[in-house]
Image (cartoon, rainbow, N blue to C red; front, side):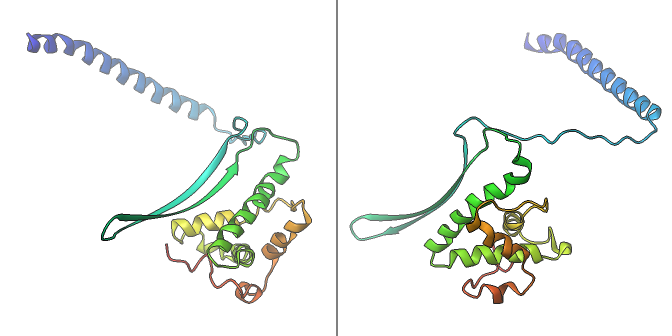
Amino acid sequence: MRAEGRIEGMPGIRGLLFAFWCLDVLAVCAMGNDQAIDTVPRTLSRRKRYLIFPEGSNLQLVFCLTVGTYAKENDVVMGLTAALAWELPSTVDKKVSQLLHRRSRSVMFPKIEALLQSTGLDGKACVLRALCEAAQRDPSDLGNGSLVQELLHAIFTLPTDGGRFERSEDQAYEHAYQAREDCGHLYPTCRYSIYELEF
């Protein structure tokens, strides 16, 4: 009986597949006709749109390292955790197109500085050096680094929209990004380049 049920159900499936095939052929023909009619190239444009989130939403980046060891009597487990959190935008104001990138970075850079400081590095100098190096990176090298290096480059690249940091204490980031001298000599207390780290 099961074999008979499968045989009886097959014509329905075949008909459905044939209907989908016909619709696909019609779609291809319709697209071909539209392209033949519209021979004049058009420039499409629209207002810039922004992605907003519910009030209180945030993005968290958490790194956890757990190391287990065996002792004579008990097991010992040691865990290290580093976390960063960013508030996600819930409203859009009129100045957002000029300030969104710098405003979010003026919140993010001090958090990165504190994270680096907790590892024993000069956090401020390393962030400034990373900004300096991101601005001076050769455009032909873009996309040739590791995934982490390209992410760091994206984080430390400031937009070229003519905007400025609002707060005076954040102007050092702008100056570091505009510097044209050797970044290693400008910030000697930071021993590491974001492009020399092996991930």
